[in-house]
Structure formats: C-alpha cells, structure tokens
Amino acid sequence: MGFLCAPVGAFVGLWVALTATGHGYGVFVGGASIAAFLSGTFSWWLLVVRPNRLRFLPAVTAGALAAVFGHFLCWYLLLVGAFFWHLATGQGHSLGSAPVNPLQAVPAAGIYGAFSLFLLGWITIPTGALLGGVLAAVQRRNNDASHSAL
Image (cartoon, rainbow, N blue to C red; front, side, top):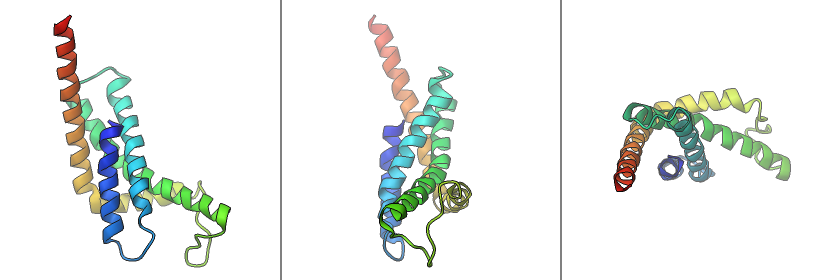
C-alpha cells in the first residue's frame, strides 16, 4: 500500500510546491511522499495484514486512514527536519526564532495537519480509499488465481 500512496503524496506535494506563495515549498514533494509511504504501509499492516482480513472494507478504511494520518506525518517530518537542519547549519530561522523541537512539533503537526487535511483531504482521502480497494481486489484476484493453479 505504501508504494501506491507514495506517488500520490509526491503529486500533492508537488502541487503544494508549485502553487504556494514564496520559496522553500519543494520540501513537500519529498516529505509528502515519505509520509504517504509510511502511513500507507502502517495502515495496511494495521487493518489488513495483522488481522489477516483482505476484504474490501478494511482495505478501503486503511487507504482513507493512510491519507488522514499522512497529513499529520508529513508536517511532523518537515518540522523535525527543519529542527535538525537548524541544529546542523544554523539556518532555518522562522520570524527570528529557531524551529520547534521534535516534542513541540507533535501539536504543531496536528494543527498544520488538520489545516492541510481541510484543504486537501477532499482529494487525498477518496484517493487513499480507492487505492486500498483496488489493492485488495488485485491481491484477492491474485490469491484466487494462485489457489486455483494448485
């Protein structure tokens, strides 16, 4: 699932980078694709693989959950990345102050993630659900084909 979600994250990140005002938004391409991969992989494992339920509803739910959690995770990765970039280089001041630390980044990512979910969730959640449903259908078809070949 993560491999299907990552290109969607990269596409949404690229859209943000191209439409945002200012500079430095290119980090969203990598951040969103990594977040989508991680959230897609984890949600698929949590709802489909671990309980061994390759069914339509858990798969669609896993895809939608991946999209929701991906917004938070993307912001968290970017905020923590800015913190460590600031530590390593001294760059990355925002309005005269250093970036938030990894602990402070948790509530900040929640706020920013909720805002980005509000702006982009209309496309990311249905897309994640669609990817989950398609992946489940393909895997079920492959499982049925491999069992009938035996």
